[in-house]
Length: 530
Image 1 (cartoon, helix red, strand yellow):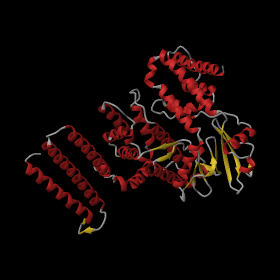
Image 2 (image 1 turned 30 degrees about the vertical axis):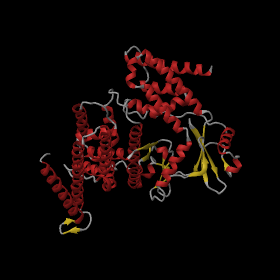
Image 3 (image 1 turned 60 degrees about the horizontal axis):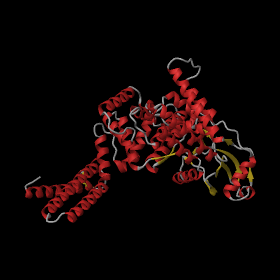
Image 4 (image 1 turned 180 degrees about the vertical axis):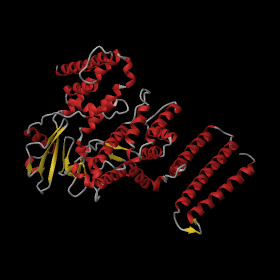
């Protein structure tokens, strides 16, 4: 019966908001609040699950106007803490031992309380100060129940209003539901924290509080106590430039080396310790970037800085910000408008986060779903840019990001900033890096197809020989092209020992490439066919 009552409550709230919005939109109702504010009030009345749903929706800058994003980001978890005896019971059940065996001290009053969990201070028997994060009892079941009921309400609404299908609300709910399940599993957060702690072990600028070994489960997480001044504390301005640079470098390492990044760097999760280290808290929201996505992100950044609209469009397609069959001319025009808006501004006022958002919104209404990791990336960029400007309002974020990104990428991608050559060198170097794997895969497919022909067709030896010669020539041509590109890069960067004015490795590369070219030309000449 409680589920039926909850279904009615959710359905009534959703339909009431839709009706109110329609009346306001048709100017049949004079509203005292904005639609975004009314939506937030509706969400808050529906409770914990819907507050988390609203916070998840705030990631979708590609779908929602700025006023909705700002309103949803302001949603706060107004939840009273649960009693100390329940907290102790949850800890003992999760960790399998009585509180006195686990901790020398355990504070009854929580340090903080939110919709998913609350946090208590404690002290281990070895003297270490820790915090104990305890998931609210039954919150996981409550989230699953509410999300199922919301899907039912939305399915009925879509049957009545088919035009809503273009926004894919059910897929959106499923995405947020899946991420809420991850957020309520503290084992994932512990694994993320351990990964970041290991990556920044010994860092002179970044600190990640340690997870206490064997003291974390799905519902309880025990972590080293640490803190400091919030990143938006005005007393940090004197050292703001160095701290801003350290924060940017930390994110460059995460994006281009680790392939995983802290996705929620708001001021409550970033503290400056007395030692000067930047302390990262709360790894419940983490984004991932595989190597191709990291490379495409670097390409987008370079294209944006060099104001190359065609390159920006290609990078946006490769990233997944845009997808499907599209009118390149129309999208290129949108890129050019974006570039023109920034062209007259100093580089320090450019915003990569805003550029990402504007490109993503070019696809609005075209059934383009942006991957979740890019939504987290956009959120992170916005929050990181705000954190940097809190530390130092005059900090040239993009210039620092660009310079360090090129330094990080240069060994693997050969990125350069020379006008007119930056894209050529970036793409050529990326192609060279991928050439062995691509060539191996191509030869594998060719061998597989050749074997199939041998099994299925008899008496075709001459055709097989022709195919074999052709494949050999293609392979030799690809290797030769790779040698020319590699030798050119070695020449430009003057890498290795030298023979007179020329790097020895570049000379060897050119010599081998010329020899392969001569062999290829001679083979074609003898056959009399291209």
